[in-house]
Image (cartoon, rainbow, N blue to C red):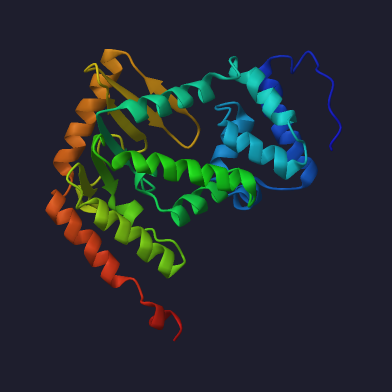
Length: 283
């Protein structure tokens, strides 16, 4: 474990100390930002912004850095000090999960990956591996938890569900053809559910609203709506009316650019037909 530095007058401010420690550990290891990004699966610009103090990143990123540098808990502890409230992000996410399970209506948009509620086990596992998790019990638990969330879309009390999926996300396949075929089949099956509506946002629509933000809008039993927005850095639960209304307007405008549900189903089916069959994989 690299030696801890004494807090100096120059680095007593938590965010600066966190950024300094990140850069020191990387330099000691001899990595460039590009090499660090390739090793952990995040864009190198994220680590540059973290070392420059523009962002502190998410707990998942920091946990991955702790594991990579062999500093278990050190960077996460500094991150918690820099964040001010060490449990804010995680508490917000847990609250969102509770609200999602109670929702009577769910609207989602995902610009870069398929929404969690539509992911197969193989797809979810791959995304979690690209984060801070490594093969083992914790990874299996996270995959199981995501699959359990998916069950909420079935049954007599299932909420009305709408997902707008960016064409870029649906054209980025899993490298295993059979796993990708399974994922597309699942999307096709979900599109046939009476309570589910899937729409594809075509690349031809150009830049649109919510272009870089995963967004979920939850209609709750009492009639109010809350939202969850997430970037590659962190997530936020939005409950105030003005913020939710802006996101809802953006989502509605985004839906105007999307393919119709019927066109979207046909598009997904065409992609499924283009996936090489098992016999083709062996040739």
